[in-house]
Image 1: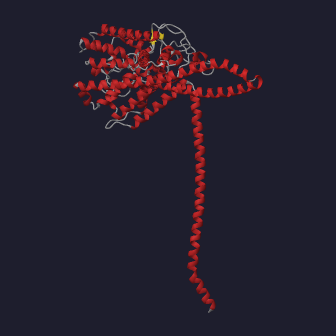
Image 2: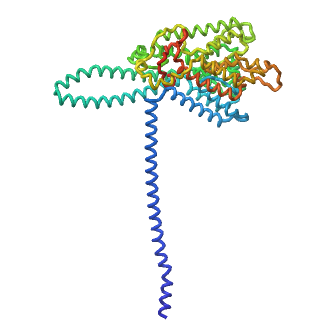
Image 3: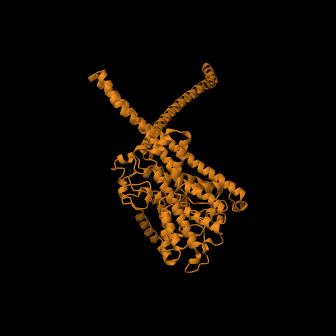
Length: 576
């Protein structure tokens, strides 16, 4: 009985014992779980801290490499390739509504053409949506010569600031060591005498470096203001004109193009000398509107041919207004500043004279050969004169057109090919001389300049890529000899290398065997090439953008850049 009662008591107390044991077990599990979570958190924090330190160190090393050891050509190549690929992805994702999307190769070709400001087209511009047009605007800004040179100037300032800070530390350390040695060996008086002799020239050098750096920073801000002011003013002027001209406004409305989009697109394209417009026929629809063409012509010149002279004029004006010594230093020491577009006074005058002479010469020849031709048919005398002037200004190197270039006479085509071949800084009146900066003269040619030994001249590049284009398009040249003539191929290669965008196009009327399925298109002649031929043109456009890097190694022509490039001149980052 006693055993039975004891068992009964145990059974009655079992739930209470179980209840007491379970909470203890849960607390233990909770404690262990907290410890594991804490350890995992510490582990993750440690790993993330190590990863962040490694990432920061990687960025620091990359930054130091870009600042001190990188080749300017490689930096600019990476910059343009990155922008081109980003533009391709943006164009691919922003597909036009209710329209077939172009092929990936065509999108990549268009992106490269925009970044290199070449305006070579394989797709009609009206096939792109409004969002894609804004992508073009961004690409033209980032790839434009003025913007790229401005980035290069800021990059150079960063490099100079970093070198100055590093040199200051070294001087401070060396001075301390020097002072302690002199004090130990010769006494305080001898130390002060030695320091007084060395301090004066050192201070003068430091003052010169400081003034150079301050002037370069001022120049960077002047270029930025110049860039922004040119685009904003041109956009506003174009918008005002479109609001006044009802015909132009209705034309854009019929093509579903917003006025602000067209104004900003045209202003950026003209200033960057890209040559793209939101319209299929470029500026042909405005050929009977001379006012609009006269408004665009200065925008084309201020962003390319006349950029260097106008930049110097702007600095001179600011110096007269503000009386800051930095502006006077910039004008008096353009070589020490090291900005390629900053030219001495004589060179600036020669650039203006050369640019005006070439434009007037082309305009006069167009009027002489084409006045009563089909190219200028239906235009009044003032419209013909304005159209000829606008077309001549675009041959260096914007690429916007108001007339069908393929209908021009052969002499005019040859003149256009020559104008596309010449760099924007070409001056017929320029004097030969070593215009290198002191830094360029002191730079060790070994190592950094090794790649220049393999650089090709412009004529060599044109010959090689023309031969390659003829090889890839040999079947078309045999089957369609009128459209695929050797001159058309050469003209297309020169246009791509000059980053101009002029093209003789493709005409179904020239087919030896008529084809009912053939359709004339507004895009360039390269749009009819094979994929291999388009890849060649992509490469040519990139090489054309880097042509400042391969004008080395041979005796220059009488017609040569005002910059006075020499075989050992080191181009700046981003072609600045």
